[in-house]
Image (cartoon, rainbow, N blue to C red; front, side):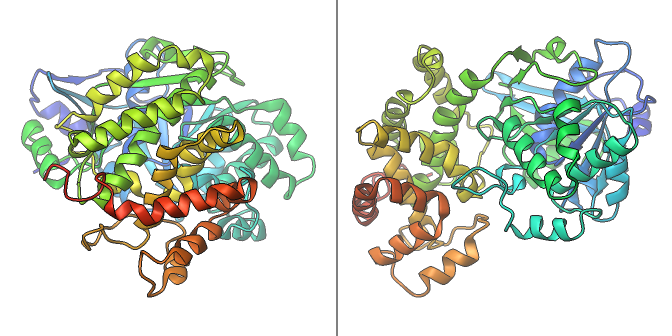
Length: 490
């Protein structure tokens, strides 16, 4: 079977219900995107594709993968084209996205990527590198200068490997080459993600060139944004369905929900793409949307991932169909609602009702292990921040505490019935060494894990009495109806 591409698309009669744009793709790309994973394809690239249909001069994207070759292998033989498959209970929606022109594999094309960031025609750099890609200290939120990638990049700043190092080096060359103003737009699940990105890049830049920080302040904008679209990993069977649908092989296809939202702080340097034409909400501040999404949607996802995962459940729709877990999530929302912005609080009921419907979508097959991955990078903004706010105001936080306890249990690598689970964790080796051969009911092991994780250790130091509550919940969790045999068998 031939691969999807501009050429094969012309020669193939795809079904009429598959949307295909016809804007020209010969212009020089104005956007560089770091992190061409499934979420970028499901969200940002789809927005640009829709916007490009409505303007005379399209904003095309050059993608870059910083660590894995897979995206380049998937998309370059297809000239960047891929199928966007959005699923909802009422039906499926298909689109061939053409905004992405191709993918650089940064380890082999490092200088090409840096030159693109420095190039005058590049007006926007966007990022979906996940929380861990910013190399931040989980307790302080600042650049972790002891992070192995940052240490390596500071030794060889002209050949950076991390997203922060690549941005700093590209902007350094842009300054030297008089490339003009540029915007760096973070699209990751971090509170005030633009500010986090700005401070990380400024910190790194200040260690490389003293004058670079002032140039950044005057020439580079780092708007914050809030992204919202559930994007599970596509299965081999689903890829095969796409191939059958198109009559073409598409290794880059993505599957996602129909719902999508993107809220962007209207703070750009240089040219700004008219993303509002594609439904992007441009605002003065994203705090209202960000607070609601991180502490309601993302917190609930983590709750279902760890509690449902320990119970042996596989997917989000399995978890939300379990009465005990659904009740837990709804009680969690009552707990966290008091910590979000007052403006967002007025919409909690409607928002949460919509979340339950999104979670229950059986067509997404959103795996709990996917959500559970990289937990040490996700917990600070989803769970620990609202937990700290409640403790500081003298309130308890039983549901947030239960999620932390479940996360501690997760590092034994099995469900509570002893079935192995696999999810990625950046601190996995350190945690495994601490656990050793100790039983998961050994509370000293849980204490050691908690104190080895900087963000959690910092919380315990601030609220020492809470540690006893956490350990008590850790010990009680295996006998809880949330994770024992009361769940519905998937």
